[in-house]
Length: 262
Ligand SMILES: Nc1ncnc2c1ncn2[C@@H]1O[C@H](COP(=O)(O)OP(=O)(O)OP(=O)(O)O)[C@@H](O)[C@H]1O
Image 1 (tube, rainbow, N blue to C red):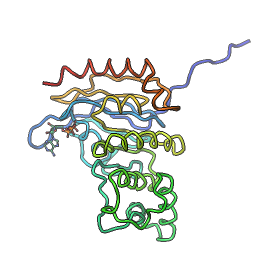
Image 2: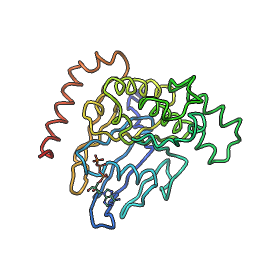
Image 3: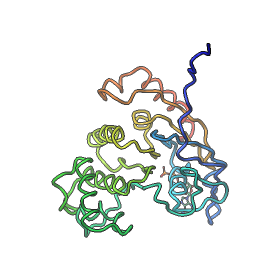
């Protein structure tokens, strides 16, 4: 009789960063030999001090800039330029100020030639999903920072990319609203099942949200540590934040990072 196979299958890789290096034309070496894997359906944070190359890495994964060395592979295909497999959520929301929420959220689909009726139906679905139902006809200046970031998230979801790239999406938002958005993002991901690469400065935010944290060190940006959090992200946020494993992880990451602060 053969024994049952109890090995846990490794999670499939959605995004592979393979030996990426980046030297800007100014001569700044922003990244050196970055090799990281992003499992499908996981939220992975890039964490590190200012200037360690987090945004540069995210832009390379998005295909917005070409690395000097190495490659990025999304769903088995090497990235050369922006691809429909990924969608970017910007820190400053990047909404068109002259367009309503509905038009902003539908914009990626408009660029892809989706007909008006269809794209607006899709946009309305995601506007509701991020908690903005009723705000379809508002303009960005008529909304709070939190609402604008929800619209930015709905726009990224509407194009139905597998991979969401989020560059400090909550940093321009006050603390209470940020916590609410973090919780809402986790609930949304339970429904949408995206692979998320999330840039943050905040250790607490990274530990609260992430399945995995990639810690970068500066000058040049290199991977200094990869931490699998193994924390449950469901349940009462205050209970999670008091979980001894949450507290220990925040402490551990903080003691690793503080040597980079002057
Ligand atoms: N377009 C550019 N041209 C030249 N150098 C750049 C450019 N963009 C970034 N850099 C440099 O590359 C390095 C990494 O910058 P990057 O913005 O990726 O870091 P970061 O970790 O995202 O920083 P922060 O946390 O402050 O946003 C820095 O030294 C920065 O000055």
